[in-house]
Length: 419
Ligand code: JFZ
Image (cartoon, rainbow, N blue to C red; front, top):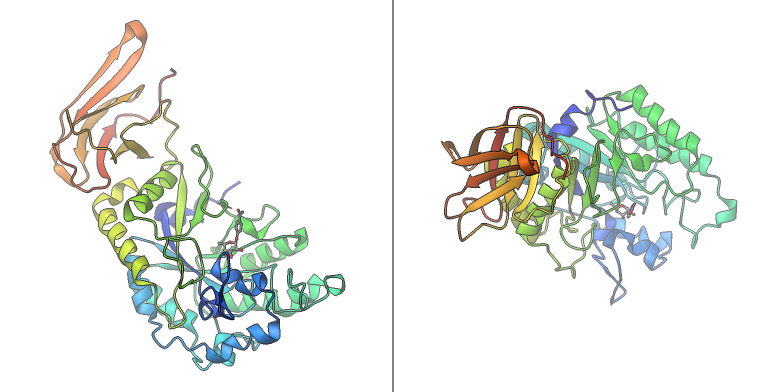
């Protein structure tokens, strides 16, 4: 069902950067002097701002501090391997040069530059895959796009007109003008019919057959499954999947949102998602000047420092078979031959952690932060009560808090014995 080779780079990556950037960065969560509830990029919908009024924002949009190289370098420093950026969000404004619709960043703003062109260059330099978010169904600017009911009469809408005039031509532009694209990230298919999801699938096959497509294109045409926003399955899930997630409580920039998650929590989420077989697509929301908030950049760089040392435990991991007990020390990630124990709760008293029911033999144990030094361990099997046990002696102090990683090399594929 899944094309394994097409997904290779994505499976290996495990960690990517989401970027929500558009006109909504100007109001930044405030409209006419009042704080608007909810995620920043939905402000037009929340306030039912007429298109005529919202589109005026374009005349002010001049992100002079935008620096594609700095964005790509930040993703690189964070250890991310792909960037998914909003080429067009639900507000309908194209953040790239569009030849079929003048409501775009080159033709409608004083900025006049095409940030996607610049990002394509920067991504190449840092070895990142450039990917585009494209809101294929909702479009609050087009009279026939979905969900703008305050400007346009829902009963008079003909989706095929929007699809033909805007959606398909713009996807064609994105798949033609920016070199190889890693994936197209569609969203909120809503009532969009089967035939349009299929058309998008076919368009990609025609223009860039190696380009992936996420499941939010609708009707099961995706190459992998996008989970709900900030949603992580409770158990391992043996198919390609991804969780899109926020660093605070919004995707698009909101000046008033200070609810940054601590670095330790982000690392915990990365590990949790990877352990269950998923990719973590972590969002930043640059402001109207084109700057990624300092808090976001700081968090990502710290995650990157941790990841640099512990990369083997994240990159190219596969879903770790569900451990039969609740783990006290933290979490585990897995790839054939290696089981990684992520020790978030350091055993301060005896510095020993233990695993039960591990069937393969451990052939070697070491910390990723100090791979030259083998750890002592004892592995036992008690036939009387069919109990498997391995105890690993750790040093006194964690080396890469909040998560110090033990690698156990295994002689056979990971399996847990029955309880
Ligand atoms: C969508 C967008 O509406 C939102 O603005 C943002 O771009 C986000 C990444 O995706 O919102 C959703 C879509 C799907 C779910 C939740 C929010 N979902 O399936 O739970």
